[in-house]
Length: 431
Image (cartoon, rainbow, N blue to C red; front, side, top):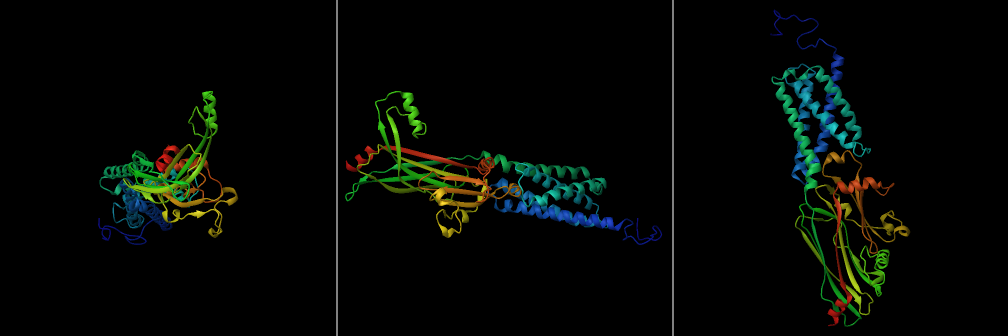
């Protein structure tokens, strides 16, 4: 029907461009629909963009790209809102608006589901919680108005929505849970003594030490802490006695579970210690690194064995991205020039602190959590320590959450240990 033909249609109070309804109500709905959809578009871009361009794995980039595509669809829905709540010149505008609202409801619902895992305050909570309420209201309104009736094949439209939602959910689950868990981790660590040499000017024996590591797994990593230490062991010998008593005494004296029948009163002296790799540097798949050092033993030393202990602590790069520029900088606990004490010297002694922000490689996790930081502590007298938590040198560390974060970011430690008799080293040097 030609609405402008006066023979067919007669208008009262206006023409074909005038809506015979409550204009204030329609304008209010238009403003709310447009504002909510625009906010959802911005949120999807903020979430999806970092993963789409910077995620390490292909699955994570696909997940971020799908979120960006859903944001583009919602941007088209913003234009459709103007037509649907206006003159409705396009029959499919209602269906496009409905699709945008369904995407918004699914996104905000997923964010809320992920947030419930930790229930931590984050500024994004003030965005996606109101947006979830908005999307439910908009969905109710559009379903009541049967907004999908303008499209010729509504079942095809519904099937497309379901397939898109399933693809996004499967990609997100794969990149978040299965793919990081399935990738293998394997390191090769070696510590070897070279041929000892006597010092002709001093009563010392120079012992070369070679340290080696290789990432033989399938995922590149950040080295967040490392340490090597050379110990000399002094012990008293006995004629045996009660084996059980000797085993108990060996445990009490720090032999870490090794029971020796004829050895007791163990004492360990640190001969040399240092850092093997620069904290914050990455070790890619197949990459190797070696270092050679020389330490000295007095010719008359009472050590019976010399032990080398090498360890590295790593974090998987497919789980998180470390702010290496800040983490690489070593903070000295005793240095007043730092502007603050990371730990009071009288409490912690002399230590080096490494501290930097870490972001999860799935941005859904980042926007539903407090900021997380990696903290590493190294000292020549103690074993190296590390932590992944929300601790930023303020407040207390939640140990339960810290353990979950360590697992979430794939942090772990691997070791190598070698022990040789001092008689062998001295014999090589004097023989």
